Image (cartoon, rainbow, N blue to C red):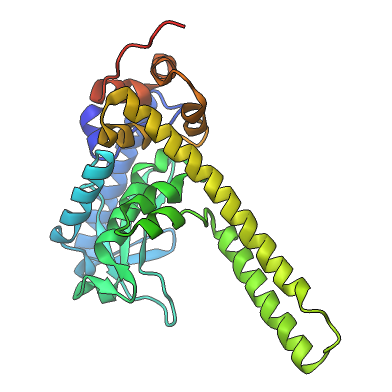
Length: 291
């Protein structure tokens, strides 16, 4: 299980060793079905998504992203297959990780433009793959609040590492776009139909939405960095602290940020959770000071 953890495969918060083994068996069966279908028909369809064997991503594409996730979070996700796909017209998605849980299955999808070049528009292929590897490695945690924040730590610029987690879920993007289009329509209505309308309501909706997203993100980022810093003091090594924090769920990260004794908290978790027992074997912490 420690070896699996280094590959980005770890138990969920409530998973027992038997349940974890059953999930891994299901993963192997799903991969076997995929490989059989690719061999016999040249393509494989799952949950409405069809990939072709001829479009399989070569292993060398994953080399640098795996080095990046290993350096940042202590795992190398070398078991997930990847495929290039033709993106829809006017689509700006570079790619994504396709996975579902607990019936475990995972694969990477990257748009065809990345076949011959490492960058498309403002998206770097290495960063994209490393980003999606983080999502797959944390799939068992079913995280939302900190998920994008972890994944965007693979970015090459400090600005993207900080701002990348502002939009947590798809609904956040939809609400922001909705507020933007509302402002556009409001301004058009003032210009062409109702000049008596004041300008401030359209701007107020957009400002309120952006302020909410930014304040929420800043609070989340502060808890994230506080938890990381406390683990760094515990281990004396920021790289190890990041790897340990990577295993924490949405409810556990604030607890690490708030505690005055992270070792005692980790001790408590390791008594009842298989996930933290594995972490303890990989990254043993100093004994907790008695309170």
